[in-house]
Image (cartoon, rainbow, N blue to C red):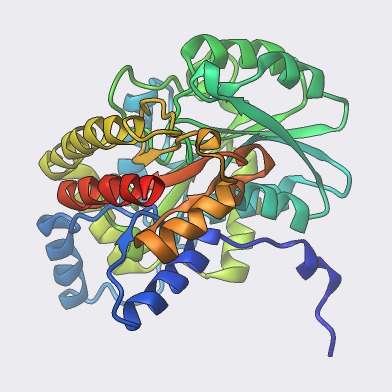
Length: 386
């Protein structure tokens, strides 16, 4: 049997490949500092885990509604409405297992062969993967280091065509940690408000931010009906393994997304939704403490990277990633990433794992202990100066 030709178009996440390599080195007895995976190194808040255990004991172990339980969707609608200052009801919310279905399902529901999708590059690799898989045309827009890794707006405007069907925004951004300035968000909205284009706004890191709160394009006049908001519980509540995300979208798109959901997953695990409800409506102390610790790590780690000859790293405004320019080391980013893994014991990602415009950069996740981050800086320095 031969695989369907569409499988040639689907991509993977390099982070998991590097993790496998790093684990293999650890099995050989080598000490590796893991800065490759974008996963909080904190425990899920205790009251959230307790809610899941209680739910299991109470029998929340059966099928639930495909769209999500009504009270949970109402809690999500309330949170999104208050945080983005837009009118949201439970009828706008689709609960899904993780954030990725809110990339895949709306794209599958909206894109035809030959449609064009504008997306950030470097950016989360699943954007391009799904665009290609569905037979649409990916249109990458480079993120400009000098602009805090925001879009080149001139290139963005020049890339809009009659075939543009969707735009993907991500702020705070993976892999750069950049936040799109509010002025840029408004400029993008002005360019597309009169066009028949949907915007997938990936806001999974919206609460992990160290300065001014990012502006959601959905909050601008006339834009909510053109937007699909992607958010979830993995990052802010350290719930990556729970697989719990959601999309907020116009009601006309909810039914197609539900159809894709029922054909693929049936529903999101019932006890996991009870845990999510506890996370969203319960104490937020753990989330606040986590963000404060990420800020402390960010400040020290970026300062450490900038003290290494050949490294130039902007201070990220959100998420938990540092994205240094390493062209000054005289090595390619791939060469340096491999050297750091195999010779220095520091696992990170080559910037091209996030697209062609990531060449010359490395991505480090500072979702690791302060001590390990400082150790990683010294290992990198020692490797480059030996």
